[in-house]
Amino acid sequence: YMSSNGRCFDIGITVSSALSRYLASGDPFAGSPDPRSAGNGALMRLAPIPMFFAADAKATWHFAAESTRTTHGAAQAIACSQLFAWMLREALAGTPRDAILSPRCPHPLGDAATAALAAGAWREKPIETIQGSGHCLAALEAAIWCFAHTDSFEAAVLAAANLGDDADTTAAICGQLAGAHYGVDAIPAHWLARLAMRDDIDTMARQLHTAAAPVSGGGPA
View 1: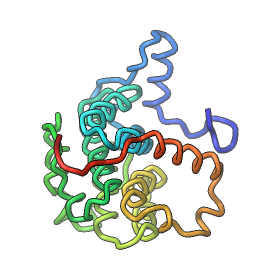
View 2: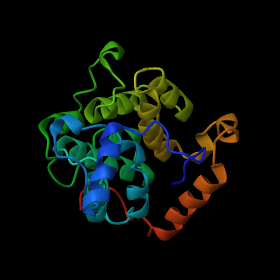
View 3: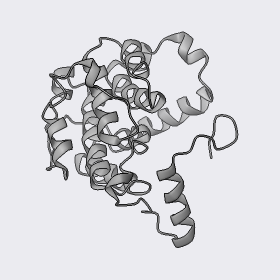
């Protein structure tokens, strides 16, 4: 569905397994709760949640988890998505970058390592220790680190991609945060010119923006 080349390619094992369970059971919350399955696949697709529920803090928090559970049921994957959704919500509301990077989540995060990340455990880490891996916590830390240590959309995404390993997903996660903060006009024109399905993506983003009620402000609710 909505593949850029008309076929499914490079699907992760966690997502593929969840889809198989859904086809067998009909339960949409087919993500495995196994901690070893806490991949980054839910983070890379998360932006529509805080976009659509921009005015509703409670719904943003709730549906970040529900969206994740369709493919990733591990507690850490859910916590990472809730943290990231909150940061995206703040960025979309125009919150200053320093405040985005010091999120005041409305509820406790259900995972100690994710809570430490939210508290700034990434701040003193050198680039050599940052890994753009397929694990949700490492991928989110890498995306946050790259956003924090650059000053433009282009620089943030390139920094994330150049970490290597699961480069495309790390860059996609970082790009959501950088895009929400810097805005669409900050995306290099030559990148947009080569974007597959650009018109479809633009139309869907505008529809989400139109459907969402205005944001009244950040902070816990």
